[in-house]
Length: 265
Ligand code: ADP
Ligand code: MG
Image (cartoon, rainbow, N blue to C red):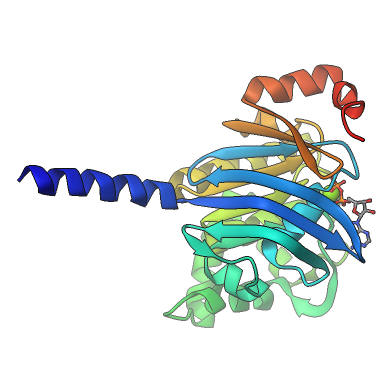
């Protein structure tokens, strides 16, 4: 009896330990230049982790490398998702395993409607595919939550969308795909106060429902007024220079990154 008990505790510990996105000594090159210079970091399921740093510090590079963008070459280190090594997996496999990236600069794609794109993206991840009618019902509910017009769905992807609309479209994707880990690259840039509030509240709702791990990338903490960070990591010139809790983000808002800029080189 005793032995069984000990065993189950051990298994439980291992089970929880697996629920994270681990980055181990990651080095990433773009066009032959090393941008990420040895980053070790864990993102936990059900937590909000803010990745902050000045412009050009490598935040988007790290996000793209995590998602498997072929231009961002991993030269050393590992990425492990819930215990599975995904360092060299293709982006579509990473997406299937539950990783999601919302882009800092979402692309416009003429000729493909939001509706068709989203249905294809969602069906790619599902065993049981949605029919057009079923998807419509599913989508309608999500649009309502985000305070988005359904006419939006007939438009081509991001074409003529305002900054806030582009960001909302990314969050709509997030709410439909329900990933295990979502990397949100500057989900606050270009969004006005109202859009920001809706985006922040929606992310909170999705997080609570799915116990999703969220990585918020931002260089100032606008978004963090709506989305409380459990952990904060500061990246400068491709290296981690500081870690802390939400108070670190507040301190950055007051004093900026100056205190870190002398430390590198
Ligand atoms: P951040 O997101 O923190 O502002 P980035 O990751 O976008 O920083 O950029 C870090 C550095 O990597 C910059 O010097 C940038 O010019 C370079 N870089 C990033 N992506 C590319 C790319 N696709 N092609 C060339 N250089 C890039
Ligand atoms: Mg960036």
